[in-house]
Image (cartoon, rainbow, N blue to C red; front, side):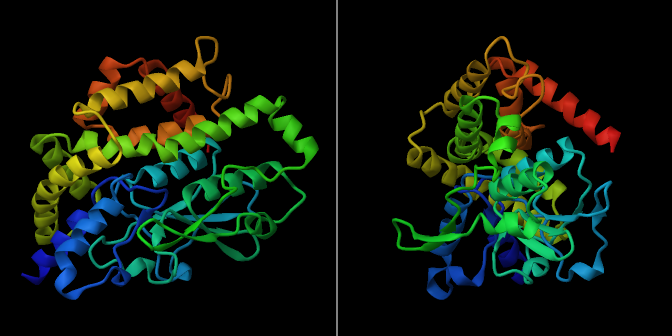
Length: 351
């Protein structure tokens, strides 16, 4: 029964979609005792905007050798859940830029691997460029590493300091940390003009990166848990890709699917989605395609920019599920999506 209880908690935790950018671990801070049912529900809602499988951090970095850049000056270890859209964004960015990195998977029930960090969310990136730095939040990770790749003026430690966490209080009275400048690359004037020849290019990229975090990701959960059948298929995928014991996986799959089918209905109401949530998904991705236009291969032109990588990273966590197949058939996203797959695969082969 203890295993079943842990698996039930994990199943709701692993609801593949979180409300705000990094995917959260379900920790002791959430409470306990007689509020267990409310606590479970709260955890599921908290994970309603992004995928929920954790591949998380190592307990001790020295136990694993991190990958190295070709230049040998940077070691990267990504702490993630494979099906978390925010983690997927980071992987898409690293893969496209040909940056080798190590991934460590954590058991989503015990979560011992992330005890090293007071920041209880993924993705987390450990980056060693002389000293080990912990980068939190998917968009901060991407902006900081991209800045580091472009600018040679500042050390990675200095660049990370440009993204300080700011404590805010939610409507529910909960303290959270946000990064107000996380969509900015910290470049000087010359570097900025080289990367963004006109101001509008930078504004557009930032707008759509934010859109991916604040809107697109919220459409995933209601769509992948739209029906009981889709909910079971989604959790079957989560359990297959995750690190579960046999009993834990069984309970996570069936209890989690049932829970998330009902919770997704509340998420639909929370985000003011239509009864047919597919229509919101279709409208969103067609809005993205329209923004790219007919005369660009990507929003970045002939090559993807950070907005392309963000949108692709979010959408690809649905691959293999009915919602993804429907999206491909009923929207205009497929040509762009296939181009994204091709350029990332080429970058991976080149490494």
